[in-house]
Length: 111
Image 1 (cartoon, one colour):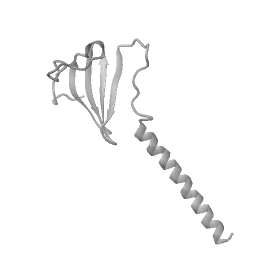
Image 2 (tube, helix red, strand yellow):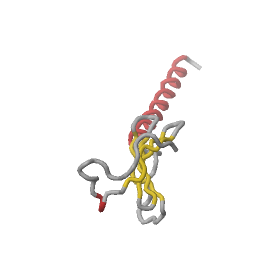
Image 3 (cartoon, rainbow, N blue to C red):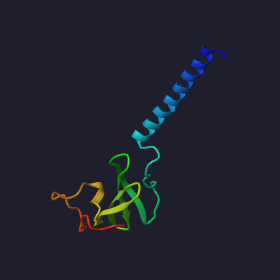
Image 4 (tube, rainbow, N blue to C red):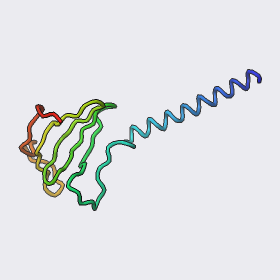
């Protein structure tokens, strides 16, 4: 083989690897493969209400069990309950004017 064939092969390999990396970055930024919220019409007792990616390693998740919500911080190696016993807002409205939507605890709880 000539050098031009090696060069062409190497450039094609770089293009393919670049495309794979680009698609992986787009998928990560758009939330593909993250925590999935529950499907509409499902009547289980437990559901993921909302998930927010803080950074590449951590995610905040609101989990609803029966009539209470719990705010959980998920990491690669640990989980931490941030607030528990949150009363969900009525009819999809946001929380009250004081910013506290329930009788939860802050910080000290661990999963």
